[in-house]
Image 1 (cartoon, rainbow, N blue to C red):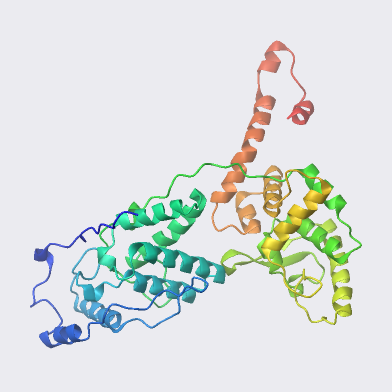
Image 2 (cartoon, one colour; image 1 turned 120 degrees about the vertical axis):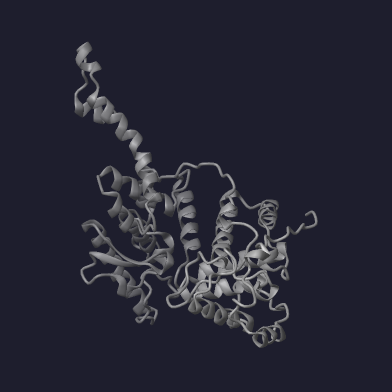
Length: 414
């Protein structure tokens, strides 16, 4: 990588800075701040798991917060439109800012996997940019260098954009646009560029891989329900197909999450969001059969108190990667190509809901999506078939030429 070129931070016009008479800080207070100026932090982001250890804010940050409250109480406008100060005392290093950001997200209650991923992004970003670089020295070229570094490492555009979104969230947090836990105020540090200027990389549009219903039927028929592993995987496949839950959500399910009549299951999705999914009558019977088999197996193994809904014979909780391996191995044994995937079943479930007329808002709630963006993709994919059928039924050509196809035949043909 070529030597990094630092761009000069954008500084405000000195004429806009309040005079000493308007400054609420006395000469003695300014001297005290200068005396207490901290050295550049030597703390590094931990390499283990990618997460940073929580730490207290520096004395300079606490002093800055008191100064900000004093200015607000005195009715004095901010010195700078973007940040609080240009002096290096008030501009933390990149490593310090990442540490504080990760800590704030932990307080917000983000999942362990999100904190872990954020820590990896932070560690790599600091390695590329430099640990001692201060926020006021950071430029958009540094962010572009990080993107180039990811591409040279072989990351695909989707992964690059995912990591870049964490960088954008961090930059917005630094300038006061981020989300802070209740009762805390987001910091406002000076940046030489607008975080909104950071653009995502282009990535090819891919078509969602929806599971083939015939392949799913062959897969279910090939599973042996007389064995513990066979019945467990069969129930898992049918549960995903019936409710659209994610593989990771299946792994987190406990027996206590199942309703007494087995008509619904409590699910913990992304971001620790809880929702309830409802089972069809056929799925309810399958789940009851699995619970009876599970109870006998756990009693035989002496693990009656095991809370996991879909445990292994040793009582351990599965992970989503193991479920993915099961899909691949079982499809290979059944001669199914391409292999059915757990997420392909989720796509099939969502598509069928759209065809059945489920409202977009209800589908969003059942699927556990945070926004309507994903839901609209399913609606647009199904919309092609629906539009073709609507055009066939509304066409006047059949009436004019006298060879109108009956509606039922049109439906069947489409």
